[in-house]
Amino acid sequence: MKPAKNPWWQISKTPKQGFVRAGVWFALAVGWMLVAVGDPTPPHWIFAALWAVVGVGYLVSAVSLRRWQRATQDRTGPETAAWAA
Image (cartoon, helix red, strand yellow):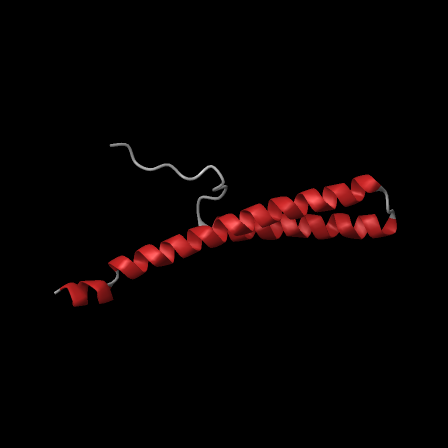
């Protein structure tokens, strides 16, 4: 049996990597928003929205990885071993 692959939407390998990359993309989105406020042309707002969407993707990926890690730790932690004995 082959090991399970990551889901197609999983874009970060670790939660830390996902949170860092989400922060970078959100910072780019804020930068483009500031540019768009000074020069309100449609491409500036489109770029700001695109960077924000990518940031949300990384954030969702990181949160789901973190939740998955906590769930597996809870099932295999020392408390589970104590109850099984």
